[in-house]
Image (cartoon, rainbow, N blue to C red):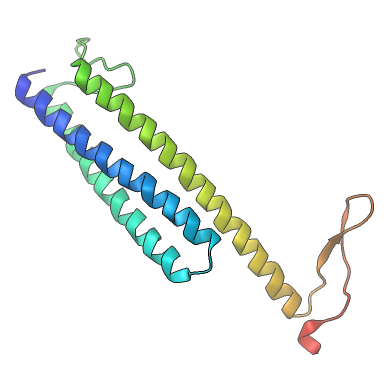
Length: 154
């Protein structure tokens, strides 16, 4: 890998790491917003997340184009297509980026789970308001619908 390509690759990876760090912070803030009571905060953090993901995608496209032009790639083992080992600094940055992105993936999955739980809660509340039988559990842990009274008729 020539020095110019290596420096450009290091720069791209540094920018990706910076944006991934911002994404991690945004995902944490999004989780707080999801467990709070401000839909505006959720919308704001979601918009920030989408913008950061777009930036990461753009940087990743730039990184891939640079690697293709220089004939190298940065896989997990940091070996190039020609079998040469990329610079240790590039390999270190790559591993740091992959660790950050793995954390972001986990945080995003947790946030998705929170959204799913909230959707189910709202669906159940809407069903109760419409007069549907709420699902309850019997003494043996089995579910069954039992209408106590229809709030929609009250």
